[in-house]
Length: 511
Image (cartoon, rainbow, N blue to C red; front, side, top):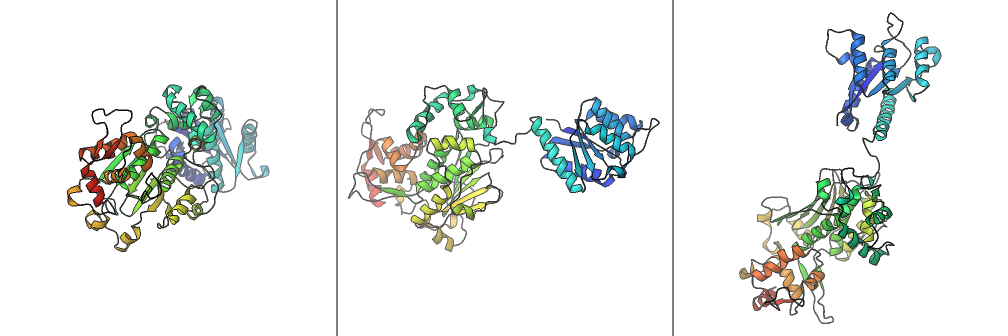
């Protein structure tokens, strides 16, 4: 979009310094500089034209006439009219937006013709008064922001509530909406049914304006959210050491709606963590847990996805190191909040309220602001080092792995320096089984002496994405000859289950 030209008009001698400062301010301000281009007559190079013709042509070209009216009326032409009044009259004739700023002088201190000019303007213009250059800047800023709002150039409401004029209801996945309603009715008593129209469901959730879906609707239920929000993705990387360095052992970029982003990012992290098991002494289903509790991971990922700044060009980044998990979110804390406040009881102030509501209804988040408190509480219960929240350019959540303190004693280390006992897993893997991954070993631990279906194994491991599970767990374990199908001649058998081979039992025994 072309910048809106602002013609700055005044008696030059009276406002010489103010004109220059205002010009520089409009150019330098991060917001105003994006949308406006100020014009000052004295900054034009020498030209072979009549002065009055040039400045009136510039008034014709501008979008906004900005007048500074003070004590002096200025130079008068043959008809006794100043250039400032000529400019104002031209802007009025062309129905330009006119913004008038008056000095705080009494009428008795002003030139008689200046008072008449002000009276001419006051009948149909809102005027602002100022005493200092800072007051002038603040008044101009407020007026120009209001101009941008009135013209629909910027939206000051929540990003997620803004209608996306580039989208239609054809961009919404109807099946996703129906699945959401089914889950929301079961978990939170959502009043509408899956047979209701998408328009009615979206109206209830405030996700539609007329026939136009909001940004939140596209992020939640869009067929291809990244078509509209290219940075709405999660980038996950796993490093063997404690610093970011290449080669990266595992790197994935996940796309999809916000529910898919959460599920895929969680699965990625869990697939790289060691899973320990107890005994079946008291229960048929073997108890187990990850080295970082799944509840902590879920809370941290959901917070990043729900509260990030979707206007940012940055993406959510997940870095799993040998000693910690870092989740980096392009977002900011509410104004006046500190990192320490997140560790104390606090209210919930979602950055994207219309995005957060459906995530609450589907059971992904709570309303009462307990997310960061739960992260700290659960970490303490599992004897993990206290999590860290950092607000810098982005917001970062750091959760420590059980070996964090021991790794910390050795200082920052890279892949080649990681002590062997801390590489990939907390267990020693015999040489003949070194090709097995953390994912495969966790799968073997869950199976044990049992035979289970794919869904049962995924449920125990807390994994939601079937494709990820097949690619990183089942298929490698099958290729290594560690597990086998109960019905090998019928892979799609409705009662299909998986069990350990003799080779798998041998590795499990070593583990």
